[in-house]
Length: 398
Ligand code: LMR
Image 1 (cartoon, rainbow, N blue to C red):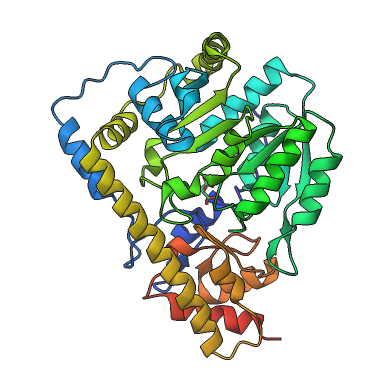
Image 2: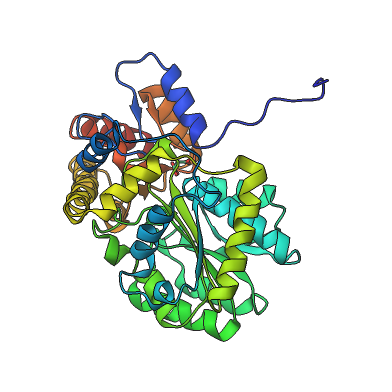
């Protein structure tokens, strides 16, 4: 039956974890996948999550959630993205369902786009999270790209980005990273977001925001939603993929939300029913545990406060490691500029290391990262930062 099946290529991100796990070296370091570690390199379960689980224990039944998932979780999640006092929420103009984290939200949206606007395309930044390409490919939505990263400055190529927005056909779909762009850690400034939003208005483009890192860029989820709020102020009808993988550390629970802003309540009811219709033959309804954890935390002012504190601790540790890595490289006398390590934000540093240099880090130093040179700053600790800096210095010496 399956004679013609060839092995699939390794996933550029999750394949790195597989290689790391298979390496017996005691010195190995994983700065591949974007998963937060504490300063001892251990995965973290937030205290607010532990408390929510204590409250769930004994009370949880294992019934199916509705196709659109937990109503309570979705309500709380929309407040985070759209704002506590959002008129769109009050006017019931947002169609939203619980999703299998950010990936699931993107995939359901891509399928929705294909089903109802089959001729449409999606503009994706260069570079982007590798899985974005898979998602829109499997949904059979043709992909176009737009300029984003400027390799020389290791910052944003704003003028090329604006040109691409202007040159795209009116009414195009654009995938935007709401904050903490993955893999580059480069975000537009507030002023630049305003210009982007203005130009989207002129062109009648649709903005779909992937917001996988709300809270991780600045430590403050409100501040990290700024790009979205600017688009909302300008009256855009946007879509958002939200995820609790990173900001609540609920990676394996696969809990998130897909939302689409509609004309009015009737349209939102119709759109939601179609989003559910897409979910039903794929997985019927989403899992319950993570959704309960999120709704308990966000529904209790004290637990929410604790969560906000814990997000900030994670973001601050990462910011501290950026400084430590840059300073270590400078102390080693590296002639290269490492300023971008502290300028970029969020979970990742787009180091500028070449695929060959990354290969050397892995084969000679047992340091694992994606071949595009992305370093997951969340995997850097006080224990491994000198080792990492030294290895980077060695492979970048001419
Ligand atoms: C990453 O970019 O490392 C994360 O978003 C994990 C993933 O699924 O790729």
